[in-house]
Image 1 (cartoon, rainbow, N blue to C red):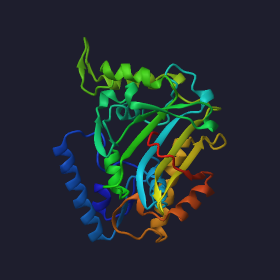
Image 2 (image 1 turned 90 degrees about the vertical axis):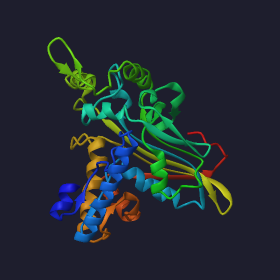
Image 3 (image 1 turned 30 degrees about the vertical axis):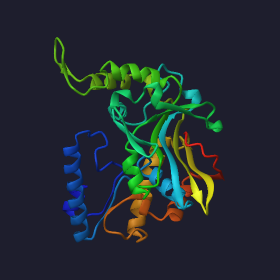
Image 4 (image 1 turned 180 degrees about the vertical axis):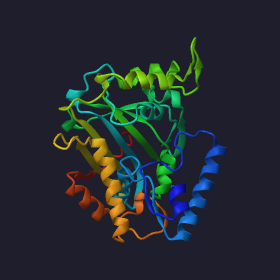
Length: 326
């Protein structure tokens, strides 16, 4: 983003601008100030920086914003963004295979989370992400089995982006994995294997997470075979009131690897939004200057473009029974 602004060129990025793993509040404040300056400079140069525009972040925010439109008052919001093997490809010891940076996945597992419970902010430390009290199950029949879900990310910031501050009572952002994953990574996290602090060995220094990434990434069992598919899941489960009536709205995308092209679901749900975003900027369908959040992107046009690429969403609405659990 810095280079794009310096060069005066518009940019579409799937990356977080604010480091979600940064726990030092002073550093977070400095990052926010730097982002604000980037926004001002981009506006002055008449360029667009479409930020966080992949799958998660990206599609999740677009679906979330659309779901929120259906309410007068939102009380509960559960957001899911996850990639994992199709059930019949989850046969290795950790029931997971990598479609992107192994070290990146592992570092996301040591990211603190922030949820809202009873209208109050609750912090979940990085090493307790996989604890049983922070886990719930999600049952989506077409996937063939229940998923373990873990808070991963700052839902308080998410609520601000969606304009829910002051009304929301329960909120969380979650990743999903097949059962058994949590127990494995819980032990790994609490044993220090996800630490990025180098340790001195007999021969050289190496960080535990770098060692684990090299070990897992070097084995075929943790990579997809030619006939195996990954799954990308994006889901917004929103509950609240419209015209005084309690309702629940669920927007969801499930995508799988295209075996003909070889493109994984992760490549499709990250790469296609970026491509669509770039074309929308070029065509003037996104004409806002400065930093642009996915919630500002025209929903109908974006979804139509996704559908042209074989990625469709489902919409479900029903009466809400008052339950705030995921």
